[in-house]
Each structure stands twice: as C-alpha cells, then as structure tokens.
Length: 475
Image (tube, rainbow, N blue to C red; front, top):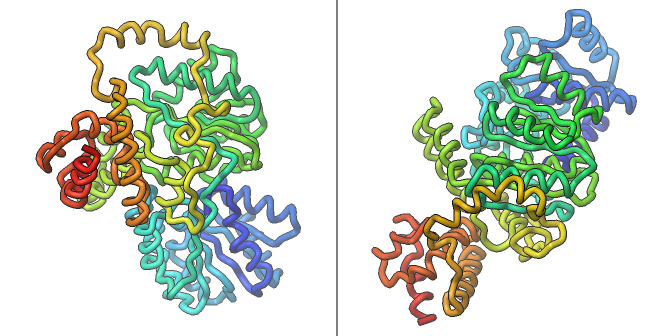
C-alpha cells in the first residue's frame, strides 16, 4: 500500500483480536515512538524497546507486557539479533509478527539493510506464528524476495492503493540550475500555505537550496544525515510545529513522517529509482486535498546517481540492478503516456487506468501545473536563456513536422499496445524523448536503430523488427 495508506492498521487491529504479543519490526526510533504514543492515546497497550530508553523505561515495558492480555511491542531489527532475545521470545505467547518497511529485507529493494535480512530467525524461534511484511514500494521482484527472505508460507498478497487522485505529477527538464530554481520558487508561490518538502541529491545542496528559498522570505530549514542527532531532532520538531514551513532535505528525511498538509513535494534532482521517488512524493496530500509533486531534473542528475552506484561497495549483481532502476527512472522522467498510469503498472497495482487527467502528460494545460512566473523568470533564467539561444538546437529541441507528428502518434499507439500486452509501463519500452528522436531520424534498418537515443541492443533485439515494421507501414 502507498505511503500513508494505512498499513499499520493491518497489524494494529489484529493485535486487539489475537491474545498475546504482537511484535512489530520497525527501522526508526522516531517512527516507533510516534506509533506507540498514538496507540497509548487510544488506550491501547503498546510499547517499544530501543537504545534511546533508559533501564527503568525498558523495565516498565516488560512489566506492562506481563500485565496485559494484548500488547503491541515495537522493536528494531538490531534488537532482535541481540543475545538473550531468542530465549526470551521462546517463553512469550506471540500472536503475530509484522515486518514494517519490508523492502529493507530484499537485496533488490531501494533501502536494503543487513539487519533486516536476518529476520528469518523469528521463523526458527516461533515457526507457527503468522507473519506479515508491509511496504509502500515493492516491485514484483522485491515482493518475491520478501516472501523468500521472511520464509512466508504461501502468503496472501495484496497490492493496491497506488493511485492518488489528489496528486498532480509534473516533471520538467532543466538545462540550467537557474531554471530549476525558477520552477521551485514558482511552485512555492503557487502553494503559499501548507508544508513543503524539497528533496535534494546531496547534503551540500540542502543548505544551498534553503539559503536560496530563505532569501525569498519563506521559513525554511535543511536536514541531512550528517547533522548531529540533536540538530536533526530540533529541525523535525520545528517542521512538526509549523515554525518551519519548508524543509530542504536529502532522502534521510521522511520515513514515518505523517503530516496531513504537505501541499508540495519538490525533487530538485532526479532520484536513483522509481521506488524512492514514489515513496517520497507519497508524503504529499495525505489529507486528500489537492497537492503537487514536481520533479525538476537535468542531464547531470543521472551522472550524480551513476557516481553513487559506481562508488558503492555493493556486489556487481546489485550494481547491475541499480543501473536498471536508474535507467527506468530516467525514462519515466522523459515521459510516456500517463504518469499515474505508469506508476500503477510499474508496481502491478490491481487498479489500472488509461489516463488520469491530473498529470503534466495527460493535461499539459492544467491550472494545477507549475509555470515559471514572469517575475521569477526575469530574475533567474534570463541570462541562461540568452546563452541557450547561441547553442545549436539538438533533435530534441527541434519542432516536429506535420508528417513527423502523425508518425509519432502511430508509434505512440504501437508502444501503448505493446506495453499493455507485456504489462509494463510504456516508458519502459522507450520514453517520449526516444520517440521524438525516432521519428526525426526515421531509421530503415536494425543497425540504424542503434543511432536512436535510448534504444540499446537488447531493446532492438526484442522489438526492433516490429518497430521498423510500424515505421515502414506509415511510409
């Protein structure tokens, strides 16, 4: 289920119906504390054990477990691996295991954690206790790996809720950083109320963006994993209270954040994969009111993500998977049919749609679309525009002829039908950027297809002949 979709109810409600202990594995102390606080306010017996508690607080939790017929206990994956946990667990009456953020179990997930990969030990200690895994972002491959790693036995699988009709998805390619700034400032101007999260690709960029936005008068802070624990807690509290309306952050911020009034989520750099992107934009509009998700990306964003991959210590197998994920994110950014439809198909949601009517692809003239305001444009992109005029236009910037437009519509229909047949998003066949280059170059052979942007040998091998057939049929 998507971020904010109510996954926690899937184990909280059963915990009230099943006598005994419900153990929830959760990756973040802040997330555990928030859920325990909310449950206790409802009169539900719940607690958590983590490094932030003193000895007396931990003893109180164990005492409460003994006193209550039903109890919800939140633990970190590291706590489960500690000596003494297994003997203690054997003596407990456990009704349910729930693994939250379950994509962390899978080496194919976007946030793999070694401690999560050892959770199969719960099955060895209590083989007959039901177990569930919950996540907002699992591709079919990750889902299969979660089932394998947790040792789930023929589990029921539920995948739904990825469609968010109140969100407007918009992606803009920016040649210059000044253009990104123009879009971000225009987005803030269009959304003067409610919280705003501005995601940045590096720690350095969080402060740079915060300084830039602050100069335009908004209350803004920045957040990343390199800040001290005290500083991060302080920033979170200010954002929670509304003292800060805008927060510029790396992907270190967000997991477990549940504000209903996030009206705008901006990505100033392209994330490394669709799973991370979807999880982060999912923090917008949890109250069901209209909200905007803007991605302003540039060519060098892919280079940054490529650097993260090549400099990581992951195995070559994992790196190969990350390259595939990055290519999918790039193709999504370059456009296809409908951004909401693409997301639903990518995650294999049970609900599918043809066109949403509230994304930049389906409705490019929507009044919800962020347009660079005249004032911002004058101050931010006038100089870069004059430089741009001197450059020779690429094939992507040239206007299509009438014949090329007709040909592109024919190929678009073929792409749509082929994607539906294979049950994959249209952008994974090829993006709109590739489509434009294709009709301009008008290849006549398999070898000439290799000169088209975004068509590698594998794609040409799979559907090159069919594509050439469509092009020749038009001629």
